[in-house]
Length: 341
Image 1 (tube, rainbow, N blue to C red):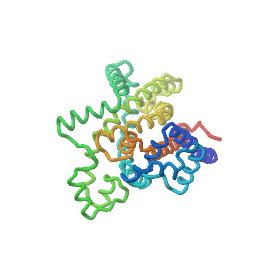
Image 2: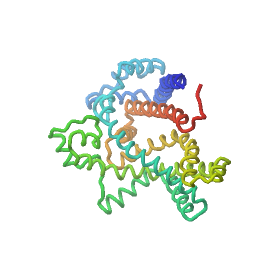
Image 3: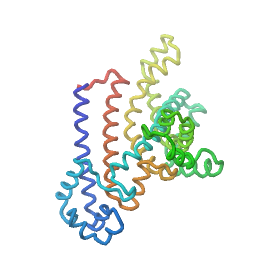
């Protein structure tokens, strides 16, 4: 198992290398003048595009440009972000905690809701509850994330005035900027506790409700459908009938034996689920004015900020490759029959 994990971990740099080749290659479709815009750090430089093109060899071939880019990356330089007006690495450090906080606040409810509702639907097969949950799952999985987010903003925040948008109220942000508040992790829900500011933690949790709910509605619906199908398959197998014939309580048969085996297809879905979740975070952060990596990348795409987009894509590639490795490890935890040699 350890050898397998090491081999898979060593594949991650290869994945990032191939991904970088694709992205830098796609950038060659832009004109040298468009690529030069990524290196502009002030308005005065707009008049000197030709000098920028010459300095960074933007009029030369793909191989030359990739070598120059890779050399800078290996030295920890991902370029300058025109959107945030600072180096890309500095912006990633600032905005990653916000996106991480949002992702974590949605991921746990997504998994728990999807598994619980899928199990509930399977154990009430063809009943009224099953029919209702199936309709809800189809609607939830069919709706685009941005539609759900806009509805929540319009009806819950705009209509009822509940919760809020952004990470914290402006008054609290001003208070933190002028007071004695140390950002240990960059996540307000945790830093509020570490600094003894429970009002900050509570305000951050309240602001996470709507964006996290939008993700939960869409993504958990897919998990629920897979879990229901897998659970029905397991409940029809011989070992379940044998367990029932031996007089085991129905709860033990369903939740201890059948559900554990039914989780394997759900784990397989973790990769695509994460991909949809990341795509949803980009849109949701923009709609809810949540200053994370997704909002930053969306604004960069509108202004063709190539350095920002390249860094964002590589970061997502790293996350996806790592998650796929963790999925393979989770197989062994859920099903001891699986072994990697």
